[in-house]
Image 1 (cartoon, one colour):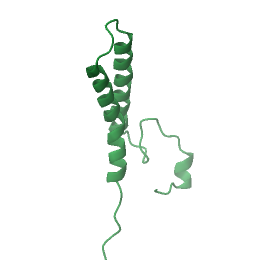
Image 2 (cartoon, helix red, strand yellow; image 1 turned 90 degrees about the vertical axis):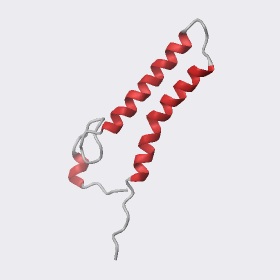
Image 3 (spheres, helix red, strand yellow; image 1 turned 135 degrees about the horizontal axis):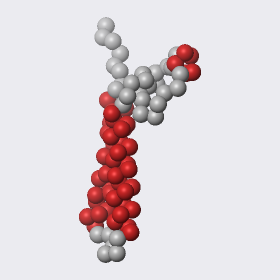
Image 4 (tube, one colour; image 1 turned 135 degrees about the vertical axis):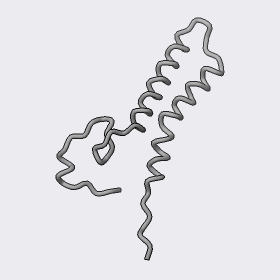
Length: 84
C-alpha cells in the first residue's frame, strides 16, 4: 500500500475523490450502479405480480457492475519494480 504523507493525512478528501484528491469517475459509476440495483430491486419486490428470474438476474448484474470494476482497478494499479 502506498504510504500517506503526514501532510496528506490531515487533508479532508471528498467521498468521490481518489487517494491523490482527484475526482474519481469510477467511484461515481459504482455508486450509480449500486443505487440502480437497490431501486430496481425494491421496485420488483413491491410489484403485485411477483418477481421473476429475469428480475433477479438484472439486480445481480447491477451489483456486479457496482463492485467488480473497482476491485479490478485495484489489481491493475499494482506497480512493478524498475528494471535493472
